[in-house]
Length: 366
Ligand code: SAH
Image (cartoon, rainbow, N blue to C red; front, side):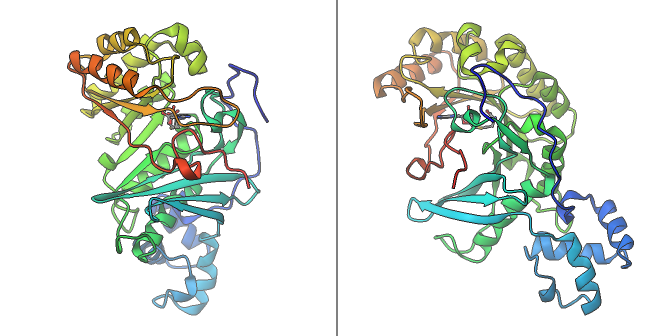
């Protein structure tokens, strides 16, 4: 379903839900589910170890389980994601996967290996209802929310490929997870929070990824940012600001018509105060749209002396959009202006543009 300019979709269409999966459940719920299947509760721990530590879903390989139990327990490991296509670039160290979900919905995830770390960029919704005009995902509208396990499975798939040595650089593990794929994570709040819990809980409860390595990126759903601050999960918050003034932000990030720049920044500072985590301000530099020096100056004034980091992203091209990345000299001037205000700023080295796998390019078509 495509959207009219500026139209927002908060509530996902009601659709059949994916099958219940181990990764949807807390440890207590897993024990209960296993007991319901007629198995001893401790089998939940064994199954969790196989899934979250050994990254396997093949019950026949779980030789510490009696054969009869294996069949019953396989009900908790339904296949949720089917790989439709894999594209790589950067000599195989950037890898985008197109996944089909049980109902045919398509999503994408991207694995990026750097010399010192691996980052997985995951989707939280099939499509997106936030309708930012420069983002490919926003153009097709929202298909549905993803389940906790569908989100976690993207990371497990990446972890499995790394452990198996399929990614150049030798066997490795996932260090960071960024919710910067398709979807607005805070519009699928419950499932996203549970997925974060699965990611950060130590094995065998979860994948044991450091909460500091998890980034939740949002267009700025102010009440949800407040809730996130109270979860006791010290994840990094990234705020997609893209303009320091309401007039422009109303058009670039339509949610701004609900919650203004001042409100969303207040929510971000409150998040930083509560979690002691530096908030990341995302700002895609769009030629002659939001890259003027006066806007850099205004942005600098708004964020100076805060627990903040500004991440400038050269705009990635998307189909049907006439906008392009800023000229190099304008980008440099923008950076300099921010630095004059003492604001920590970096320009993101965006990966995966060649395979439409960079920020804002995920559109998931076959
Ligand atoms: N809905 C969330 C999660 C998506 S994250 C959010 O908006 O934060 C994707 C990031 O890439 C966001 O910061 C988004 O604004 C940015 N982005 C979207 N389209 C882009 C494009 N064409 N070029 C560069 N960055 C883009």
